Image 1: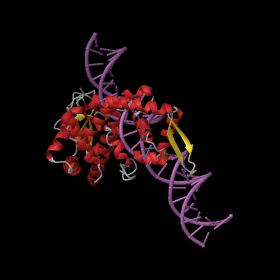
Image 2 (image 1 turned 30 degrees about the vertical axis):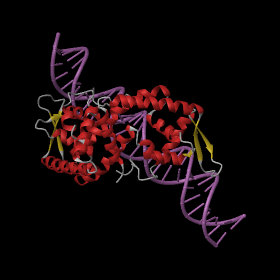
Image 3 (image 1 turned 120 degrees about the vertical axis):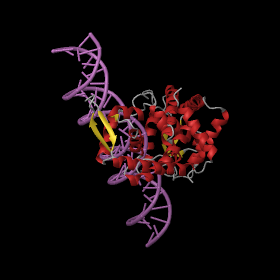
Image 4 (image 1 turned 60 degrees about the vertical axis):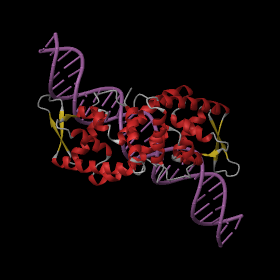
Length: 154
Length: 154
DNA sequence: ACGGATCGTCAGCCCGACTGACCATCAGTT
DNA sequence: AACTGATGGTCAGTCGGGCTGACGATCCGT
């Protein structure tokens, strides 16, 4: 969280006028600003947002294969490999050859992974709340609802 | 628009349940879906969204330097170089050494650039409207307002 | 027992965006 | 005028995220 981004901070916002009407710009920068909240919030846990999302998806009762996990996140299975390498290196997850289909790795959270995930999730929620603070309850609900509607592939 | 992204389309949306509550996910995917509308809409003009934004920023009455243009878009000046290389190659803009400060390039739209920008801007707006179609007027206004509030660095 | 599909892995590549160095130029100082 | 420090444009290098393509191991239907 330092190299990419830039999320304003510069220039006397002549931009805002022109770009503030462009949905793409608004969405992108909302995301950037949110990332600025969440990144630091997760850093103490040794996680970034993507990794936490992986943990979240793996936290269900049923252990998943790498492919299943990838699909739930909408990422490629080859991307999942590296993600899990990192998470396994930090002892948050554990790969294990599936008994029933020995092509598959079933992936499970470790004890440490479970605890960290729970704590990190709270930190993420707090960061989100902080980010959303300028909006009242209603506006927040409407925002989420609108975004959900728009992302539901029609 | 084919290689990157993936924006769902796969998996029986077990994701939606888990991730639909995560603001980061919603923002990211809203953006992806919007890009899917806008990309093809701008393709006929030989532009992508970033390039159109550059044209928009340069379309003001006063010609800007590369640095000024970059700052208004919140991008790096080194990034602007390549962007302008492309736009100049397509004859949409023209660089010219500033008379008053010969370190600067002032950048201006060509005639062709102006016409293309106007047309492309309409196409972009149409694409945005299409993307926003699932929301009624009020919801759209609220969404834009909320995003604007959140992106205003407080 | 085979041939085709599936899963995990790895190498290679693309894209966007940044950093660092370089050169030309400007502006203020001496 | 000459020096010095800052500024603007350029380029090479690099990084992060994510993909494609190929490969080996396995599975499965015939």
